[in-house]
Image 1 (cartoon, rainbow, N blue to C red):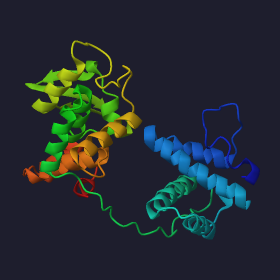
Image 2 (cartoon, one colour; image 1 turned 30 degrees about the vertical axis):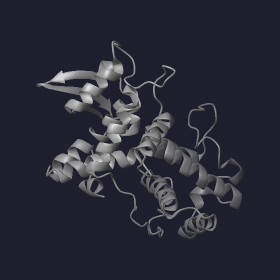
Image 3 (cartoon, rainbow, N blue to C red; image 1 turned 90 degrees about the vertical axis):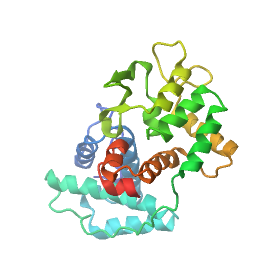
Image 4 (cartoon, one colour; image 1 turned 135 degrees about the vertical axis):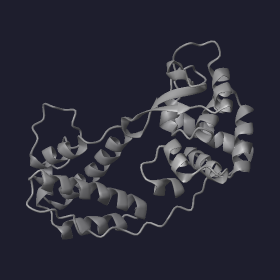
Length: 280
């Protein structure tokens, strides 16, 4: 790939009028496997790598392992966090692996690229007392804040899942109130709601029969950015530091494990593909 072309449509595959070269087609084939936030993240990572290739005059599909190692060193020199470098290298390695599988390059230059050591996160989930305090405080805001809090903290939804829930997705199966969601990777799931979550959602939707369960003050669907702000506001009022949606989902897992629920059942409830994710 010519350096001057390196940052074109790989990166925005929506423009079908732009002719693709081999590197862009390789990117399109790699990105076609992804969707949602994963697609956005991979596209962003590839854009960074292609821009670096442009700046250094490197043809993307002519890269060798030392080139990718130099890219790693360049990111370190720019002061990027080890976790960010590891994620971008993971994307680049995946790109070259599939380019090799598809026969676009004779060998995978990223196969033996060194990855940075990423220290385990020092963040932790809430313990049961902190989660209880958080939920109690959320109820003092309003019904919408409380509904967001219980969906994240008592049912373990991701913030993106909670924001996209609709009243029409509520159901009743085998004596349990349920909520149908589309989870990570566009995987549908039906979640049984704990009684407190069901009651809180009923208060949030009131007499409405359709539309989003969670709404902002202006009546529009709650978005991720506002949801993060709500969670921080609740945590601050509750006297809890560093609260964000992931802390709540981790708190949901911790509370379940502390209550003696088997790891396998908690993994299923959290919709994790790997039990190691549930225990981190």
